[in-house]
Length: 441
Ligand code: 5AD
Ligand code: SF4
Image 1 (cartoon, protein in one colour):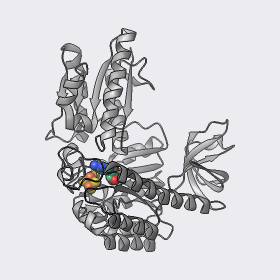
Image 2: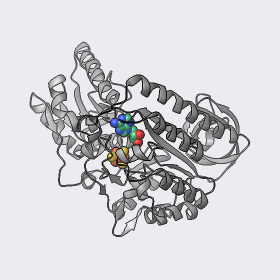
Image 3: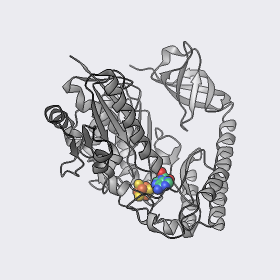
Image 4: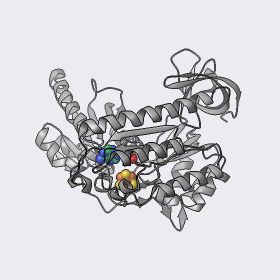
Protein backbone atom coordinates (compact mmCIF):
# COMPACT_ATOMS: atom_id res chain seq x y z
CA UNK A 1 0.00 0.00 0.00
CA UNK A 2 1.32 3.45 -0.75
CA UNK A 3 1.97 5.76 2.12
CA UNK A 4 1.92 9.50 1.77
CA UNK A 5 4.97 11.68 2.30
CA UNK A 6 4.87 15.44 2.71
CA UNK A 7 8.19 17.30 2.65
CA UNK A 8 8.14 20.98 3.53
CA UNK A 9 11.25 22.83 2.40
CA UNK A 10 12.68 25.97 3.92
CA UNK A 11 15.67 28.02 2.79
CA UNK A 12 18.03 27.51 -0.11
CA UNK A 13 18.01 25.52 -3.34
CA UNK A 14 20.32 22.99 -1.75
CA UNK A 15 17.42 22.12 0.53
CA UNK A 16 15.07 21.85 -2.46
CA UNK A 17 17.49 19.31 -3.95
CA UNK A 18 17.85 17.44 -0.64
CA UNK A 19 14.06 17.28 -0.22
CA UNK A 20 13.69 15.67 -3.64
CA UNK A 21 16.44 13.18 -2.81
CA UNK A 22 14.82 12.28 0.53
CA UNK A 23 11.64 11.48 -1.40
CA UNK A 24 13.74 9.30 -3.77
CA UNK A 25 15.24 7.46 -0.79
CA UNK A 26 11.82 6.81 0.73
CA UNK A 27 10.09 5.72 -2.50
CA UNK A 28 11.22 2.06 -2.20
CA UNK A 29 9.53 1.98 1.23
CA UNK A 30 6.22 2.79 -0.46
CA UNK A 31 6.11 6.53 0.22
CA UNK A 32 4.65 8.70 -2.53
CA UNK A 33 4.67 12.51 -2.35
CA UNK A 34 1.54 14.41 -1.33
CA UNK A 35 1.14 18.16 -1.24
CA UNK A 36 -0.03 18.81 2.30
CA UNK A 37 0.34 17.37 5.81
CA UNK A 38 -3.39 16.59 6.29
CA UNK A 39 -3.33 13.04 4.92
CA UNK A 40 0.39 12.40 5.27
CA UNK A 41 1.81 9.28 6.96
CA UNK A 42 5.14 11.03 7.23
CA UNK A 43 6.04 14.71 7.32
CA UNK A 44 9.59 15.98 6.93
CA UNK A 45 10.42 19.59 7.67
CA UNK A 46 13.62 20.30 5.78
CA UNK A 47 14.84 23.29 7.71
CA UNK A 48 17.06 26.34 7.34
CA UNK A 49 19.21 27.87 10.08
CA UNK A 50 20.65 30.82 8.21
CA UNK A 51 18.69 33.50 10.08
CA UNK A 52 16.86 33.48 13.37
CA UNK A 53 13.39 33.81 11.85
CA UNK A 54 13.98 30.72 9.73
CA UNK A 55 14.44 28.43 12.73
CA UNK A 56 11.59 29.94 14.76
CA UNK A 57 9.23 29.10 11.90
CA UNK A 58 10.14 25.45 12.33
CA UNK A 59 9.03 25.36 15.94
CA UNK A 60 5.66 26.93 15.11
CA UNK A 61 5.14 24.45 12.27
CA UNK A 62 5.97 21.58 14.63
CA UNK A 63 3.30 22.82 17.04
CA UNK A 64 0.72 22.77 14.21
CA UNK A 65 1.72 19.25 13.14
CA UNK A 66 1.39 17.96 16.67
CA UNK A 67 -2.18 19.29 16.86
CA UNK A 68 -3.03 17.92 13.43
CA UNK A 69 -1.76 14.46 14.36
CA UNK A 70 -3.73 14.46 17.61
CA UNK A 71 -6.94 15.71 15.94
CA UNK A 72 -7.02 13.19 13.15
CA UNK A 73 -6.06 10.30 15.47
CA UNK A 74 -4.01 8.49 12.84
CA UNK A 75 -0.25 7.88 13.03
CA UNK A 76 2.15 10.34 11.43
CA UNK A 77 5.94 10.17 11.53
CA UNK A 78 7.26 13.68 12.14
CA UNK A 79 10.86 14.26 11.06
CA UNK A 80 13.02 17.36 11.20
CA UNK A 81 15.85 17.47 8.66
CA UNK A 82 18.26 20.10 7.40
CA UNK A 83 20.37 22.71 9.11
CA UNK A 84 18.21 23.44 12.19
CA UNK A 85 18.28 19.72 12.89
CA UNK A 86 22.06 19.69 12.49
CA UNK A 87 22.63 22.72 14.71
CA UNK A 88 19.92 22.22 17.31
CA UNK A 89 19.11 18.51 17.29
CA UNK A 90 19.06 18.10 21.07
CA UNK A 91 17.18 21.36 21.50
CA UNK A 92 14.46 20.15 19.10
CA UNK A 93 13.98 16.97 21.09
CA UNK A 94 13.75 19.04 24.28
CA UNK A 95 11.34 21.66 22.93
CA UNK A 96 9.34 19.27 20.75
CA UNK A 97 9.64 15.79 22.31
CA UNK A 98 6.84 14.49 20.08
CA UNK A 99 9.18 14.60 17.06
CA UNK A 100 10.11 11.09 15.84
CA UNK A 101 13.23 11.66 13.77
CA UNK A 102 15.90 14.36 13.71
CA UNK A 103 18.43 14.07 10.91
CA UNK A 104 21.16 16.29 9.52
CA UNK A 105 21.84 17.12 5.86
CA UNK A 106 24.60 14.49 5.66
CA UNK A 107 22.65 11.45 6.84
CA UNK A 108 19.48 11.27 4.79
CA UNK A 109 20.68 8.22 2.88
CA UNK A 110 20.05 6.42 6.19
CA UNK A 111 16.39 7.50 6.35
CA UNK A 112 15.00 3.99 5.74
CA UNK A 113 16.81 2.71 8.86
CA UNK A 114 15.61 5.69 10.86
CA UNK A 115 12.00 5.15 9.78
CA UNK A 116 12.21 1.48 10.76
CA UNK A 117 13.70 2.39 14.14
CA UNK A 118 11.11 5.09 14.77
CA UNK A 119 8.32 2.63 13.98
CA UNK A 120 9.79 0.00 16.34
CA UNK A 121 10.91 2.04 19.27
CA UNK A 122 9.08 4.61 21.22
CA UNK A 123 11.30 7.66 21.55
CA UNK A 124 13.00 9.73 18.94
CA UNK A 125 15.80 8.82 16.56
CA UNK A 126 18.59 11.39 16.31
CA UNK A 127 21.19 11.18 13.53
CA UNK A 128 23.18 14.36 12.98
CA UNK A 129 26.58 12.82 12.36
CA UNK A 130 28.99 13.83 9.66
CA UNK A 131 29.44 10.25 8.47
CA UNK A 132 32.67 9.23 6.73
CA UNK A 133 30.75 7.86 3.73
CA UNK A 134 29.40 10.52 1.37
CA UNK A 135 25.61 10.18 1.18
CA UNK A 136 25.73 10.61 -2.61
CA UNK A 137 27.24 7.11 -2.93
CA UNK A 138 24.08 5.65 -1.38
CA UNK A 139 21.35 7.60 -3.11
CA UNK A 140 19.19 6.03 -5.82
CA UNK A 141 19.19 7.65 -9.28
CA UNK A 142 17.31 10.98 -9.14
CA UNK A 143 13.74 11.14 -10.40
CA UNK A 144 12.82 14.34 -12.16
CA UNK A 145 9.28 15.27 -13.09
CA UNK A 146 10.04 18.41 -15.02
CA UNK A 147 12.23 19.98 -17.67
CA UNK A 148 14.40 21.85 -15.15
CA UNK A 149 16.35 20.13 -12.38
CA UNK A 150 18.94 20.78 -9.72
CA UNK A 151 22.12 18.75 -9.48
CA UNK A 152 24.17 19.01 -6.32
CA UNK A 153 27.90 19.01 -7.15
CA UNK A 154 29.44 20.49 -4.04
CA UNK A 155 28.51 20.91 -0.42
CA UNK A 156 29.78 22.64 2.64
CA UNK A 157 32.00 25.63 3.07
CA UNK A 158 35.52 26.40 4.30
CA UNK A 159 35.23 30.17 4.00
CA UNK A 160 33.98 30.89 7.51
CA UNK A 161 32.38 34.25 6.91
CA UNK A 162 31.97 35.46 10.47
CA UNK A 163 28.17 35.83 10.23
CA UNK A 164 27.41 32.44 8.72
CA UNK A 165 26.34 29.08 10.16
CA UNK A 166 26.90 27.07 6.98
CA UNK A 167 30.45 25.84 7.77
CA UNK A 168 29.04 24.42 11.00
CA UNK A 169 25.74 22.97 9.75
CA UNK A 170 26.94 21.64 6.39
CA UNK A 171 30.55 20.97 7.31
CA UNK A 172 33.68 21.50 5.22
CA UNK A 173 33.86 21.74 1.43
CA UNK A 174 33.17 18.49 -0.36
CA UNK A 175 33.17 18.07 -4.14
CA UNK A 176 31.40 15.14 -5.75
CA UNK A 177 33.55 13.29 -8.29
CA UNK A 178 33.12 14.47 -11.89
CA UNK A 179 32.14 11.00 -13.13
CA UNK A 180 29.25 10.72 -10.67
CA UNK A 181 28.00 14.19 -11.58
CA UNK A 182 28.14 13.46 -15.31
CA UNK A 183 26.25 10.17 -14.78
CA UNK A 184 23.53 11.98 -12.86
CA UNK A 185 23.35 14.71 -15.52
CA UNK A 186 22.98 12.09 -18.29
CA UNK A 187 20.28 10.30 -16.32
CA UNK A 188 18.36 13.56 -15.85
CA UNK A 189 18.71 14.39 -19.56
CA UNK A 190 17.35 10.93 -20.36
CA UNK A 191 14.33 11.72 -18.20
CA UNK A 192 13.66 14.83 -20.29
CA UNK A 193 15.51 17.51 -18.31
CA UNK A 194 16.75 20.35 -20.55
CA UNK A 195 17.90 22.84 -17.92
CA UNK A 196 20.31 21.93 -15.16
CA UNK A 197 21.35 24.07 -12.23
CA UNK A 198 24.58 22.88 -10.64
CA UNK A 199 24.30 23.46 -6.92
CA UNK A 200 26.73 23.99 -4.11
CA UNK A 201 27.07 26.21 -1.05
CA UNK A 202 30.28 27.31 -2.72
CA UNK A 203 29.68 25.82 -6.11
CA UNK A 204 32.62 27.48 -7.82
CA UNK A 205 34.99 25.95 -5.27
CA UNK A 206 34.10 22.60 -6.90
CA UNK A 207 37.12 20.59 -7.99
CA UNK A 208 37.72 16.97 -8.98
CA UNK A 209 40.78 15.31 -10.54
CA UNK A 210 42.31 18.63 -11.44
CA UNK A 211 39.12 19.90 -13.07
CA UNK A 212 37.52 23.13 -11.96
CA UNK A 213 33.90 24.19 -12.42
CA UNK A 214 34.61 25.74 -15.85
CA UNK A 215 35.67 22.34 -17.19
CA UNK A 216 32.68 20.62 -15.59
CA UNK A 217 30.32 23.13 -17.18
CA UNK A 218 31.78 22.41 -20.64
CA UNK A 219 31.34 18.66 -20.12
CA UNK A 220 27.75 18.95 -18.86
CA UNK A 221 26.87 21.33 -21.69
CA UNK A 222 28.07 18.67 -24.17
CA UNK A 223 25.44 16.17 -22.93
CA UNK A 224 22.75 15.58 -25.50
CA UNK A 225 19.48 17.24 -24.49
CA UNK A 226 20.96 19.72 -21.98
CA UNK A 227 20.49 23.13 -23.55
CA UNK A 228 20.52 25.42 -20.51
CA UNK A 229 22.94 25.50 -17.60
CA UNK A 230 23.23 27.53 -14.43
CA UNK A 231 25.29 27.26 -11.28
CA UNK A 232 24.73 28.69 -7.84
CA UNK A 233 25.91 29.98 -5.33
CA UNK A 234 29.35 31.33 -6.05
CA UNK A 235 32.01 33.01 -3.97
CA UNK A 236 33.87 35.92 -5.60
CA UNK A 237 37.19 34.43 -4.46
CA UNK A 238 36.62 31.25 -6.46
CA UNK A 239 35.80 32.82 -9.85
CA UNK A 240 38.86 31.56 -11.76
CA UNK A 241 39.94 32.44 -15.31
CA UNK A 242 38.61 29.24 -16.82
CA UNK A 243 35.17 29.73 -15.27
CA UNK A 244 35.04 33.30 -16.56
CA UNK A 245 36.09 32.00 -19.98
CA UNK A 246 33.27 29.43 -19.86
CA UNK A 247 30.84 32.36 -19.72
CA UNK A 248 32.24 33.54 -23.04
CA UNK A 249 32.45 30.14 -24.70
CA UNK A 250 29.58 27.95 -23.49
CA UNK A 251 26.39 28.98 -25.18
CA UNK A 252 24.21 26.88 -22.88
CA UNK A 253 25.49 28.75 -19.83
CA UNK A 254 22.80 31.29 -18.99
CA UNK A 255 23.94 34.94 -18.83
CA UNK A 256 22.99 35.27 -15.19
CA UNK A 257 25.17 34.87 -12.14
CA UNK A 258 24.39 34.95 -8.44
CA UNK A 259 27.57 36.33 -6.93
CA UNK A 260 26.94 37.52 -3.37
CA UNK A 261 28.71 40.72 -2.35
CA UNK A 262 27.20 41.21 1.16
CA UNK A 263 28.63 44.71 1.70
CA UNK A 264 30.35 47.50 -0.21
CA UNK A 265 32.57 48.58 2.67
CA UNK A 266 36.12 47.25 2.79
CA UNK A 267 36.13 47.54 6.57
CA UNK A 268 32.98 45.45 6.89
CA UNK A 269 34.06 42.94 4.23
CA UNK A 270 37.21 42.42 6.26
CA UNK A 271 35.26 41.99 9.51
CA UNK A 272 33.00 39.53 7.70
CA UNK A 273 36.11 37.60 6.61
CA UNK A 274 34.86 37.71 3.02
CA UNK A 275 38.38 37.46 1.59
CA UNK A 276 37.71 40.04 -1.12
CA UNK A 277 37.37 43.81 -1.19
CA UNK A 278 35.17 46.15 -3.21
CA UNK A 279 37.71 46.71 -5.97
CA UNK A 280 38.21 42.99 -6.51
CA UNK A 281 34.46 42.61 -6.86
CA UNK A 282 34.17 45.55 -9.26
CA UNK A 283 36.98 44.17 -11.43
CA UNK A 284 35.39 40.72 -11.41
CA UNK A 285 32.03 42.12 -12.48
CA UNK A 286 33.77 43.96 -15.29
CA UNK A 287 35.63 40.86 -16.51
CA UNK A 288 32.43 38.81 -16.47
CA UNK A 289 30.61 41.41 -18.52
CA UNK A 290 33.45 41.51 -21.02
CA UNK A 291 33.28 37.71 -21.32
CA UNK A 292 29.51 37.75 -21.74
CA UNK A 293 28.17 41.24 -22.46
CA UNK A 294 24.53 40.27 -21.81
CA UNK A 295 25.40 38.86 -18.37
CA UNK A 296 23.37 40.15 -15.42
CA UNK A 297 24.38 39.86 -11.79
CA UNK A 298 22.40 38.88 -8.73
CA UNK A 299 23.59 39.28 -5.17
CA UNK A 300 22.92 38.97 -1.45
CA UNK A 301 23.42 41.79 1.02
CA UNK A 302 23.54 42.05 4.78
CA UNK A 303 22.92 45.39 6.48
CA UNK A 304 23.70 46.17 10.10
CA UNK A 305 26.67 43.83 10.49
CA UNK A 306 28.29 44.63 13.88
CA UNK A 307 30.20 47.92 13.70
CA UNK A 308 28.62 49.03 10.40
CA UNK A 309 28.59 52.84 10.36
CA UNK A 310 26.61 55.23 8.16
CA UNK A 311 29.74 55.60 6.03
CA UNK A 312 30.07 51.82 5.60
CA UNK A 313 26.44 51.61 4.59
CA UNK A 314 26.93 54.48 2.13
CA UNK A 315 29.70 52.39 0.52
CA UNK A 316 27.19 49.59 0.00
CA UNK A 317 24.70 51.94 -1.68
CA UNK A 318 27.53 53.29 -3.79
CA UNK A 319 28.76 49.93 -5.09
CA UNK A 320 25.19 48.82 -5.81
CA UNK A 321 24.73 51.93 -7.94
CA UNK A 322 28.00 51.19 -9.75
CA UNK A 323 27.46 47.49 -10.48
CA UNK A 324 23.69 47.32 -11.02
CA UNK A 325 22.03 44.10 -9.87
CA UNK A 326 18.96 42.55 -11.45
CA UNK A 327 17.90 40.25 -8.64
CA UNK A 328 18.83 40.49 -5.00
CA UNK A 329 18.20 39.18 -1.53
CA UNK A 330 18.93 41.55 1.32
CA UNK A 331 18.76 40.91 5.02
CA UNK A 332 19.22 42.52 8.39
CA UNK A 333 22.18 40.97 10.15
CA UNK A 334 20.98 38.26 12.50
CA UNK A 335 23.38 37.07 15.21
CA UNK A 336 23.72 33.30 14.94
CA UNK A 337 24.86 31.42 18.05
CA UNK A 338 28.32 29.93 17.66
CA UNK A 339 29.44 32.27 14.85
CA UNK A 340 32.27 34.75 15.55
CA UNK A 341 30.27 37.88 14.67
CA UNK A 342 27.60 37.07 17.24
CA UNK A 343 30.10 37.99 19.97
CA UNK A 344 31.38 41.22 18.42
CA UNK A 345 30.81 44.46 20.29
CA UNK A 346 28.96 47.26 18.48
CA UNK A 347 25.91 45.26 17.47
CA UNK A 348 23.77 47.63 15.40
CA UNK A 349 20.40 48.59 16.94
CA UNK A 350 17.35 47.05 15.29
CA UNK A 351 15.76 50.35 14.15
CA UNK A 352 18.99 51.33 12.37
CA UNK A 353 19.08 47.96 10.60
CA UNK A 354 15.48 48.42 9.55
CA UNK A 355 16.09 51.88 8.17
CA UNK A 356 19.14 50.76 6.20
CA UNK A 357 17.39 47.71 4.85
CA UNK A 358 14.49 49.83 3.62
CA UNK A 359 16.83 52.26 1.94
CA UNK A 360 18.89 49.54 0.28
CA UNK A 361 15.82 47.65 -0.86
CA UNK A 362 14.35 50.77 -2.45
CA UNK A 363 17.50 51.14 -4.55
CA UNK A 364 17.68 47.42 -5.41
CA UNK A 365 14.01 47.26 -6.35
CA UNK A 366 14.46 50.25 -8.61
CA UNK A 367 17.32 48.48 -10.40
CA UNK A 368 15.25 45.32 -10.88
CA UNK A 369 12.37 47.40 -12.24
CA UNK A 370 14.59 49.24 -14.70
CA UNK A 371 16.05 45.96 -15.90
CA UNK A 372 12.62 44.35 -16.33
CA UNK A 373 11.31 47.39 -18.16
CA UNK A 374 14.27 47.29 -20.53
CA UNK A 375 13.30 43.72 -21.46
CA UNK A 376 10.08 44.87 -23.16
CA UNK A 377 10.34 44.34 -26.92
CA UNK A 378 13.36 42.05 -26.54
CA UNK A 379 13.47 38.44 -27.63
CA UNK A 380 14.66 35.77 -25.26
CA UNK A 381 14.43 32.03 -24.80
CA UNK A 382 12.16 30.71 -22.07
CA UNK A 383 11.91 27.17 -20.78
CA UNK A 384 8.14 26.72 -20.47
CA UNK A 385 8.07 24.11 -17.75
CA UNK A 386 4.85 24.81 -15.82
CA UNK A 387 1.19 25.36 -16.64
CA UNK A 388 -0.14 28.85 -15.99
CA UNK A 389 -3.51 29.77 -14.55
CA UNK A 390 -5.33 30.03 -17.88
CA UNK A 391 -5.92 27.14 -20.26
CA UNK A 392 -3.14 27.01 -22.85
CA UNK A 393 -0.94 29.31 -20.79
CA UNK A 394 2.54 28.19 -19.74
CA UNK A 395 5.03 29.73 -17.33
CA UNK A 396 8.79 29.46 -17.35
CA UNK A 397 12.01 31.26 -16.56
CA UNK A 398 13.86 33.67 -18.78
CA UNK A 399 17.65 33.37 -18.95
CA UNK A 400 17.63 35.95 -16.12
CA UNK A 401 15.35 33.87 -13.86
CA UNK A 402 12.38 36.18 -14.42
CA UNK A 403 9.09 34.24 -14.43
CA UNK A 404 7.53 34.63 -17.89
CA UNK A 405 3.86 33.92 -18.79
CA UNK A 406 2.98 33.00 -22.36
CA UNK A 407 -0.58 32.43 -23.68
CA UNK A 408 -1.68 29.81 -26.20
CA UNK A 409 1.43 27.63 -26.11
CA UNK A 410 0.03 24.57 -24.29
CA UNK A 411 1.68 22.15 -26.71
CA UNK A 412 5.20 23.43 -25.92
CA UNK A 413 5.31 22.34 -22.30
CA UNK A 414 8.84 21.31 -21.32
CA UNK A 415 10.45 23.07 -24.27
CA UNK A 416 12.62 26.11 -24.76
CA UNK A 417 10.66 28.65 -26.77
CA UNK A 418 11.76 31.95 -28.26
CA UNK A 419 9.47 34.72 -27.01
CA UNK A 420 9.14 38.48 -27.24
CA UNK A 421 8.57 40.26 -23.94
CA UNK A 422 5.37 42.29 -24.11
CA UNK A 423 4.56 43.55 -20.60
CA UNK A 424 6.08 43.89 -17.16
CA UNK A 425 3.93 42.78 -14.22
CA UNK A 426 4.91 43.24 -10.56
CA UNK A 427 6.40 39.76 -10.20
CA UNK A 428 6.62 38.44 -13.73
CA UNK A 429 6.83 39.25 -17.41
CA UNK A 430 4.26 38.56 -20.08
CA UNK A 431 5.46 37.45 -23.51
CA UNK A 432 4.28 36.16 -26.87
CA UNK A 433 5.82 33.12 -28.51
CA UNK A 434 7.91 33.74 -31.60
CA UNK A 435 9.01 30.20 -32.43
CA UNK A 436 9.71 26.90 -30.73
CA UNK A 437 13.47 26.56 -30.58
CA UNK A 438 13.59 22.84 -30.24
CA UNK A 439 11.13 20.01 -30.02
CA UNK A 440 11.56 17.12 -27.63
CA UNK A 441 12.43 13.92 -29.52
N1 5AD B 1 22.35 37.33 9.11
C1 5AD B 1 21.77 37.85 8.00
N2 5AD B 1 21.93 37.33 6.78
C2 5AD B 1 22.70 36.23 6.66
N3 5AD B 1 23.04 35.50 5.59
C3 5AD B 1 23.83 34.49 6.00
N4 5AD B 1 24.00 34.55 7.33
C4 5AD B 1 23.33 35.64 7.77
C5 5AD B 1 23.13 36.23 9.03
N5 5AD B 1 23.69 35.74 10.13
C6 5AD B 1 22.64 35.84 4.23
C7 5AD B 1 23.84 36.11 3.35
C8 5AD B 1 23.91 34.88 2.49
C9 5AD B 1 22.47 34.50 2.39
C10 5AD B 1 22.21 33.08 1.98
O1 5AD B 1 21.95 34.72 3.67
O2 5AD B 1 23.55 37.26 2.57
O3 5AD B 1 24.51 35.13 1.23
FE1 SF4 C 1 28.42 31.16 4.53
FE2 SF4 C 1 30.45 32.65 3.64
FE3 SF4 C 1 30.44 30.01 3.22
FE4 SF4 C 1 28.70 31.57 1.89
S1 SF4 C 1 30.95 31.64 1.73
S2 SF4 C 1 28.25 29.62 2.93
S3 SF4 C 1 28.25 33.12 3.43
S4 SF4 C 1 30.58 31.03 5.22
